[in-house]
Image (cartoon, rainbow, N blue to C red; front, top):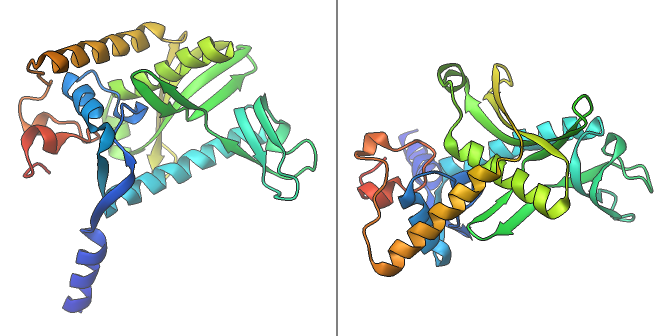
Length: 255
């Protein structure tokens, strides 16, 4: 049994490999910390290393996001791009809501594609663009799965969540002329969907997005001049659990 346990530990739980993806200033790593901006910039050519735990958690988060999206799609509330799941049909729809999330041509379920943005300083996906009938406009959602204890304890969302939602809302309003009425950060519990917690912010949050872009420009200028870029964390204990750059700031001993 010890041999099997050792095998599982070494080949699965502790396995670490390079990911095909790369470090960018993705919405998930949005943060006011200048050093996060710096590492997100200088890492544009380096592959990210992911452990089994991180891949596992990312997969669970992805599944939860798909379930939430599908629930809104069945009610005809989800806006975005679609492709019919029937390969023989394969029709696509852009910038639209589908009644029941169903292909208009053949009646098969349609697969929802998250909107992807590639703007200076920000590359990321929009988790959900949802029509609110009572408010006659769209809410931009940032969806995250959180442990029940975290949801009950935390009173304010992480700045990265608000920044992500604000960036998506601003770009959707500017590029697609979408009637965006607000942004919502929604934390859904795991392993059960309740309790959940949400924070609503009216408007598109363009001031939040512009502030982030200015921060990116300032950091880029300091990097070009060879100036020191200080972060917000003084010790390893200050690093938020969702920050991907703890080892960069505090060495390989950081956990």
